[in-house]
Image (cartoon, rainbow, N blue to C red):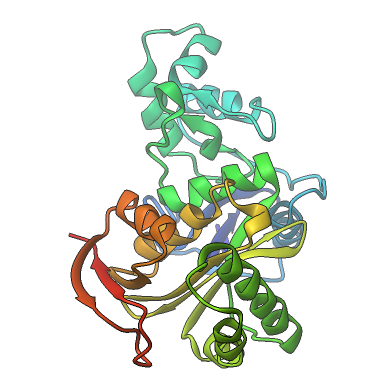
Length: 306
């Protein structure tokens, strides 16, 4: 008999599975191989003690910094797969290893492809850290949960940054994001006079509360960037100037594209850094206006993915 539970996380819903004593599965809902090996007789048992342990470990891990012992894990698979999964567990927190490194660690230097296949079949994500396996040269390849999740997990372990979706628009969070917006705009929108920044700031809290999907990146619990998404449109994307250069914009936009379905955005033409970033991320200009949406003389570029 197998038991299951669904838990929430900043990276989306997580499916847990157990034989009643140990954890046998941990997948992001909808990922490749989600629920692999669960029979039709698997039943929901959210109050199972091992699931409470798994939730506690997952919360601590995704907050970053807090070390909590993971629940017991029972891995099936072939002997070779279990060897590979054991090698993954030996990769230290915050480190990575290539598929070639893992093959050599197992004494099978020619087995890179087989190692990659076994990594992809890992049934207990995060605890068996398959996100730490990378391609040659450190390229991010082959994560069953999606490359945006892999990049986010590596950023969490290397720099303490976690980017997740936020449902609650608490006043304290809205205030913090509004302050972040102003710092970001003053650092990147030099074409705006002070009075214009102050005028626009009055509209920002309402825009944050109204955006259908809000994603916030935090470092040590403090917001360092945020993104709003409305359907296929990127509503807003702002990074604290003190946190630039850490890949936060990419973390957020990659999730917007791969998870939230973003395909279009609007950017000030007079903000060349932002325009260059969006071009680098694959967007191209398809329209231009001489003024912004309020008729002020700030040209806008409308960009979309091919």
